[in-house]
Length: 499
Image 1 (tube, rainbow, N blue to C red):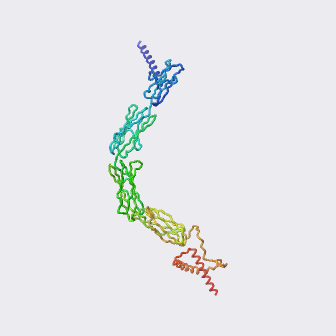
Image 2: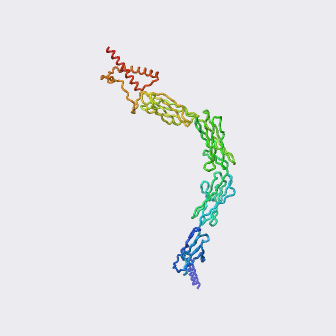
Image 3: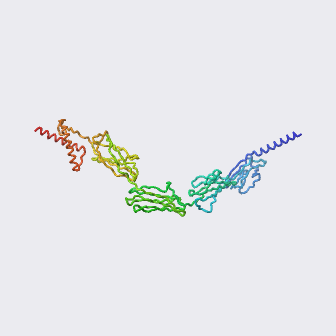
């Protein structure tokens, strides 16, 4: 009897569980709709024009009004959706057939608000708190970004004790509250902080200015207050002073002039790109060549303090010393010069030497720049040298202060023959023929030695005469002159012998 009763109870329990599971297995369709929009729900049951449809919300008969009504006899139309429309909707036909439920959730864009403090300005070193609250469906995520567009992560146990900026998140339903704490606030935090809230519908943001008040500070990339500036004769030196301060600082310079040797012309401070940075420029113009430099300082000041921003030490520098050079080698193409520039404590090391050279009897001039090494040495080739010419060579070293004194010398090329083809006029031979004098007979060689000796003496005499007269002849002109002198001597000698 007892086993039979137990079997009957198990069967009834199994039937109950099967019925329960079938009933709960109906798929729930989730529908998300934005607030203030219009939505239509279709009834999926088989129906005819005569079928009566009843809509249920949360298993209660739905009452129609101006905002909720039937759509084409069977559908459900809801206008101007709001949060009260959230719920489970089903349709029931006249033969008691029920559709699968549709879960409606009305969503909304995030709304955001920052709780501003009563005091708008804070001094550097205090704590600053900003709270950002956002509500939306689905619940929005909220983040804080610094004045340098960097996201502040939500604090945890590992960072809450070390981070200067902390973010704590509090969730209440569809509302998120994120609190930003800056402890302590620095002058670099001065600027706009931004709170951003977002969900699947939209992203919104709101900003809060953290107005940090601080005394002026140096903003230059140089990590030292004192700077050395070089000045040289006829140069104009620009001194720039920049300082960051809130309130906006004023900049002053000292001294305005020193010993009457220079004048410091300065501009009023200007604001850089609507920031808290002030900038002032000064120019040093020497009114006396004996000016040797001086010390100049700029100060920035606001109602929180006065700061020495820069001390400029202006030092006079000079062009390089004269170049020392000598002829090291004569090749078939060029002069090779050994060059040295001595060191001078008041002169920056030169990097280049300017070379000029030309033949003393010509107008064409060569000039170029040549690098020297860190010790001031170099071997410089002077190309384009022709044989048996005198060349005037000048050199000067160059640094940032300008050209040094020019050093010049006269160098003779001698009898070297360039291997490159030149466009100079062909030099005629000493062995002149009778054709030059309307004769077909050639002058014999026995007289060449005496003629050459005579020509050498004539060349010396000619050079002395021309030098005393201040005249110069080209090499070709000298040869033509000597040819005719040699010919006349030969002609007179022949006349004497014939006589």
